[in-house]
Every structure is written in C-alpha cells, then in structure tokens.
Length: 426
Ligand SMILES: CC(C)(COP(=O)(O)OP(=O)(O)OC[C@H]1O[C@@H](n2cnc3c(N)ncnc32)[C@H](O)[C@@H]1OP(=O)(O)O)[C@@H](O)C(=O)NCCC(=O)NCCS
Image 1 (cartoon, rainbow, N blue to C red):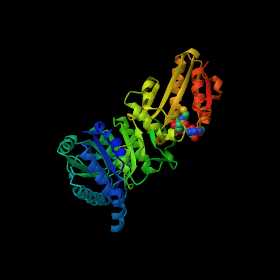
Image 2: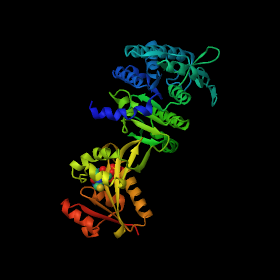
Image 3: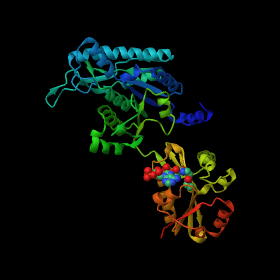
Image 4: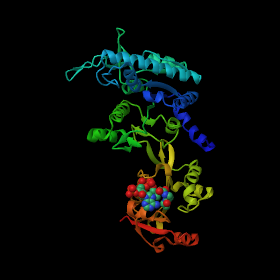
C-alpha cells in the first residue's frame, strides 16, 4: 500500500465516523477463502468508528444441506414457499453459518452477538399460494441493535424472523438488510455477493442514479439475472427510504470491500439516491489537487505544465468536478474581454472516471458560462484530444489567427504546436 492511498482513505474518515454500514453477505461468501480477509476489513471499519452490522443469507448452505439429507428444499432464498422441511433446513444452515461468522469475528478480536431483532409475520397466501413458513419483516428491534452497537458489539443477523408467539419464519436476507438499513438510518448498504456487481445483459453497471435503475428494472427487468434483480430492487427500495448509497460488490476479491468504501471508483456497482457529483469553483487547497490530477497528462504532453504560482494567480478561472466531495476532474475558463472570446483550458478527467460523460459536462459548463457572459467564441487548444473537442464538444478546427494577440504570442513561444479549436457561440 502506498502512503498516498492512506491519504485517500483518511479523507473519508470524518464523513463515516459513527455512521452505520449494513453488510448483507450472501451465504456462499462465508465459505469462500476470502471471507477471513473480509472480516479483517470489518474489524478495520470498526476501528475507524464505523458501526457495521452483518446480515447474512444462507441459500447455498440450505441447498447443500438438502442434498446431504436427500430432501428437496421448497425454496432457497426465502422469497418463495417455505415448507416445514425447508424451514428445518434453513434453521440448521443459518444457525451454523451465524456461528461461523461469530467465530471469524472473535478471531479478529471483535465482540459480536446474534440478537433476535427481526419481528416477522407470515407472508401469507399470494395469488392463491400459501407461503407457509416464509415470513415478511414486520419490524426491526432497532433499540436492541443500537444498544449493541453503542457497546461496540457487532450484530450478526440471520435470515430468520420471529413472531410474538415464538414461531420462526424464513425471511429473505435482502429484505432483512433493507429493513435494518432503514431502521438504523444506515449511510451504506453493501451487498456482498460472488459476482462483480449488478450486471444487465452481462454488462456491469458501475454507477447509477436510483431513478435510472428504477426505469431499467421496469422496462427491461429480464436483462438481470434473478439474484441481481433482487439486489437491484432492494437497492431501489433502500435509496427510496433514505439510504444514500447502495453497493453491490464481489466478496471473493481481496480488497473488494475497502476498495469500494474508500474510493470514488469502486470495482462493483454503486446505486446512489441523489446526484453526488457537482462542479464548483476551485479553492486555494485545490492547487495541489489540480497538480496531482493533471500530472500524468502533463507528462504525456496532453496538458501544459502549470506551476503552483501560475495556478494560484489564476485560480479564479478554475473549476473542480467532485464525486462524493472528491475532485476527479478540472477545467479552466479564461476570458478575453477585448476580443469577446473565452478559452476552455486544462480540461482533465481522472482515468478512474473516464468515459462517463464528465468531460462533456465540463465543456457544457464552460460553454454555458461563456454564453451567459455573451461571448461570441469559445476556444480550446489541444495536442491529443482535438477530435474529442470536435466530435463531442461541437468545436471546429481553427488557426492560431483565431487567438487573441497576447494568447497567440504565448502559443507561438510554447512551441507545442497545439491545434486551435473554435466554437462559435453566436
Ligand atoms: C479528453 C478527456 C477530457 C475526455 O474526458 P471523458 O470524461 O473521459 O470524456 P467523455 O466521457 O465526455 O467522452 C468519452 C468519449 O470521448 C472519446 N475520447 C476520449 N478521449 C479522447 C481523445 N483524446 N480523442 C478523441 N476522443 C476521445 C471516448 O472514446 C468516448 O467516446 P464514445 O462516447 O464515442 O465512446 C480526458 O480523456 C482527458 O482528461 N484527457 C487528457 C487531458 C486532455 O487531453 N485534455 C484536453 C486538453 S485541454
């Protein structure tokens, strides 16, 4: 690990301190080789005062146990009909699994407990089919959960619910995770699966606004595999009840959890409740961020080198594009009032966020400002992205004669021989 990674992590700490994350772990992850590492990461999150609750599924174990016992399970994931045999399988498999998780947490010196916090009632008869011992989460005993969390105890919640008469019901673990996340006002619900994230027609969804995912599920729900459709539906429900971020990650990957939590470019899927990106004017503290961001492009001669003093002098012209409060792109907008022209410069999008339309949003942003000011032309100079400005930004190739005289002089001195791009605004 590099020291700069540590800096990257530290910036998230104030945001996450004393907040709650719900980790919804698929049963098959518990038996994966990487599970011990995942629990180590949970211990790390706790050490940073992040309150982590574990909810787990048990489908894989119910399936295996049914095979061992030579019986057939009526349903595996707690969404279909649970007959008496399957309830027995679920009780044995889930209890065993909870125990394994408690063992793993103990091995990481974490105090943990399995409380009966899920109050359920029978799902009942749906379209004429009695779902028998399948339950629906009615309530979460959040008081008990808070009590445990306040004492630094990690709650481990199996996919089982209890009613007021002491009966047990099999509940769907995604539903449990959703209910717990809502009740505890969690800031993150993280589904830990054995897939890379939510796939739609085999294509990984990296980041998506909840409204867009809702549309996709409605219009083309068949494009998701059943397990991922459930994750997508629960992610939508979670965002709609106030959980700002839902992640779906691959728990078999080393660093999958930490990579997702402590970076803007996790490897899995992020569903977010609101626009978490925005463009703002650069501040003094951004000088370093601009230099760090553009370092690679400067080395590749895509951008001209700007010293700290140069940046500080014209900082008022710079804008930062933030994702979750972290700068991932920048742009500058210089104005030449005498010629009624503007110049878009220093456009850079971090490689982790390429091809997501951020470059276009920044061009549009600068163009809008130029139009608001009534400028007649927007200029840009580029050595390697001129076709980008043409095809994505609507610029046309110009000549150095299009530049304001002082700018032209600088252009000639630089010897960079950049292409001049012009966009007429009037
Ligand atoms: C050029 C740059 C700003 C694009 O940002 P971005 O946010 O990734 O771009 P968008 O998401 O808006 O657009 C992506 C599209 O542009 C294309 N594209 C990206 N870089 C390109 C380039 N240098 N030349 C031509 N096309 C390019 C992509 O292939 C993609 O095409 P598609 O939509 O047809 O698949 C970014 O790659 C960058 O920072 N480059 C280095 C710095 C630089 O050259 N800046 C310009 C000088 S001021």
